[in-house]
Amino acid sequence: MSKSLSNLLDGARCLSPVESRKFRAKDGREVVLRSIKWEDLDGCVEFINSLVEEGADILVDTKVSREDEADWLGKRLARAVKGEIIDIIAEVDGKMVANSEVEKRSGLMSHVGCLGIGIKADYRGIGIGTQVMQALEEESRKAGLKVLVLDAFATNKTAQALYRKMGFQDAGRIPKAICKNGKYIDLIRMTLEL
Ligand SMILES: CC(C)(COP(=O)(O)OP(=O)(O)OC[C@H]1O[C@@H](n2cnc3c(N)ncnc32)[C@H](O)[C@@H]1OP(=O)(O)O)[C@@H](O)C(=O)NCCC(=O)NCCS
Image (cartoon, rainbow, N blue to C red):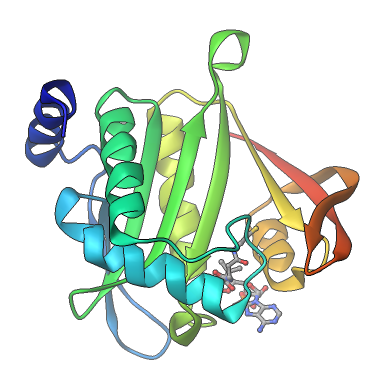
């Protein structure tokens, strides 16, 4: 690992950019929402590979190695320290069950954030997505963002239902933006003014 990345990671260990929160999911389990940290590396690998394995409607379609994920996480923590990204994970019984982010655009779009979210299959439908979205919205406002944007696969009706429930509005459709298993899928762009 380079010296500068290692210094940034040390900074990330001391900083907790996102205020942590606790709530009870609809099934009664306690859920903690907090910033991602270096110690979450193995949880991140298991999390993303479980979504890839089930064929979830996300942009990643290939399983990642621990090494690839370490590279991804190192860069992500460095960007979080610089305030370029808000990353919130959900934890149940010490296990990472969700990851999400708002990535700040730059230049003339630095008031705009791009949102992404994923919940592990066994933990869906119990309100975690709703709480994570609320936390992302709050943290985005605190960071001075004015607009959130996201893209959902046209086939992903659950995600679209969540986003509409949170007040996101349809802003357009990108035809055939995704090619999954040889089939084209449109992307639905949605936005929320904060
Ligand atoms: C989309 C996703 C984030 C929703 O998270 P979740 O924790 O299951 O969401 P919640 O339990 O908070 O439910 C939120 C809303 O989604 C909708 N929803 C949840 N489960 C649903 C289902 N099985 N069918 C239809 N709508 C559903 C409902 O509108 C629900 O609101 P309600 O409980 O007030 O009725 C989750 O399904 C997921 O991670 N899927 C795989 C990855 C993914 O698709 N990410 C988004 C990429 S754009």
